[in-house]
Amino acid sequence: MRPGRFIGAGLLLLAVVLGIAWLAPSDSYLILPDRGKPLADLVTVEGEGESETEDDGGGIYYVDVVVRKASLLEELVPAFRPDGSDAVPAHAIVPPGSSFQERRQQNLLSMDRSQEIAAAVALRELGFDVGSDPEGAQVVAVASDAPAAEKLEAGDVIVAVDGSTVATPDDLRRLIGRREVGASVRLRLRDGDETRIVSVATIASPDDGHPIVGIQVEQFADLDVPIDVEIDLGNVGGPSAGLAFALDLVEELRGGVDGGLRVAATGEIQLDGTVSPVGGLKQKTIGAKLAGADVFLVPAGDNAAEARQNADGLRIVAVENFQQALRELATLTRKR
Image 1: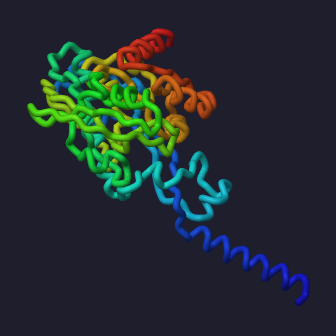
Image 2 (image 1 turned 180 degrees about the vertical axis):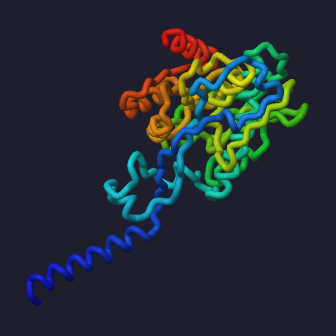
Image 3 (image 1 turned 180 degrees about the horizontal axis):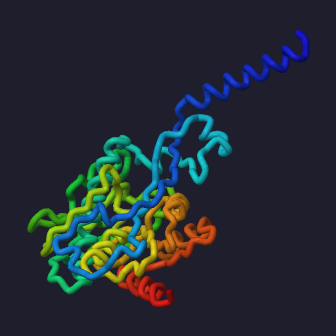
């Protein structure tokens, strides 16, 4: 075979191999950036418009990520992945023992709950009488191969760990995190007026090695919100837009939050106003930049560090709670 034909055959073979690798599924998922979107037209609040705010070009933006299955080529060769994306193992998206559709449904339920909590936090800030005392961490999913599989089920409410009170999901993570991997924890569960105690062994998280029991939880509380609030993000799921929701609700009802700035925000909000960490900060920071945000509010700690690594000039403001977020924005807008 002449050299030219040999090279041509080699290139054709390479193209075929790359094509197969591009089409072949992998065991990984891709997390991709998605442009941040304004909340103003997606939030309907009883009494909105009573403030004297005008369209000043600003607004509160939420950021999300796109998740899809990676091809084998994208998994093996980073150069073939879309800009700003990361490949993650399947267990980071779909915990063992569950399906992608089950995980999707859980995220949609978490989104609904985050909207309720954001409404409670925002309305309380505005002086409304809101019944919203945190009462525990409610189990929404249990991995079938986790130690908790035979001890817990969706709907259980955890109110204590080893005798220490659990009022929020953060309390639960903190208390379990104190134990050594492999040690057992005693969980007090409440069902109506009845309680029971179960002992569950901990395992190492596949993400960071911290002790876990293999459950997904959300805030449990009997919420009594005095005005109607409707937030419609379509098929977007997960709790990470909670901070953005709460900020937009205050902007809708009182005004003076964004001060003419495009404010992107991410963070799971708890009933006491605490802003908890979320995932995908690299992609969410890129999404905030794509939306032309002037500032990006993120949970303090590792989330803020990751956001700053990808900020490329975007102003990052780390916050620990909702009240601090409002103060930081008030300071920024006064300086304009």
